[in-house]
Image 1 (cartoon, helix red, strand yellow):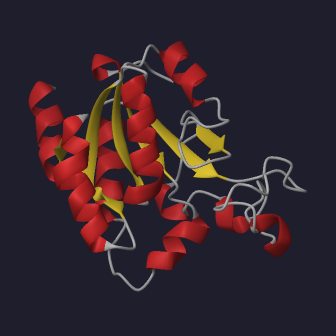
Image 2 (tube, rainbow, N blue to C red; image 1 turned 135 degrees about the vertical axis):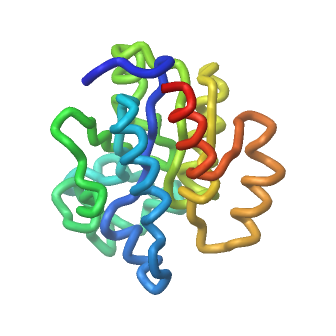
Image 3 (tube, rainbow, N blue to C red; image 1 turned 90 degrees about the vertical axis):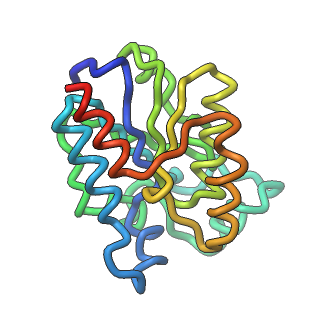
Length: 192
């Protein structure tokens, strides 16, 4: 994978079949994500996909974890499950890592930090589903790890539009630049 454009990488988080399908009634929900991925590829900015999945038998799940403990009873969400595969419209390329995480943050239990360090990445562009889940958790952890951060507000989705608005307008700006995909694309094109 090429090193890039200011040592920046685009993280596309939890755009996996089982999560994207929850938003299927909304037409064109993936358009901003697709624009961001296309612009990153065109500008030689590494794209890293992140998904949440678990091993068969769910050894990573603790009964105390309210969010994930029910999975060991209900099933699904294993690394081989179709629901945990990156949505086909995003078409991860062979040189684009697909990182598997075991909790909400993209860093939790994954090899993401090793990949970023190996590539010399110190700036992250965040996109994902859900704004109040993976995006919030990853932003907080990445900020604590001293990454420069940008959140693509229209390449983030949440089941609660008001929570999305509050996070992108009031919370995220404390630790990240928040911008629309088109504005980000224009900014990287003007540097090219």
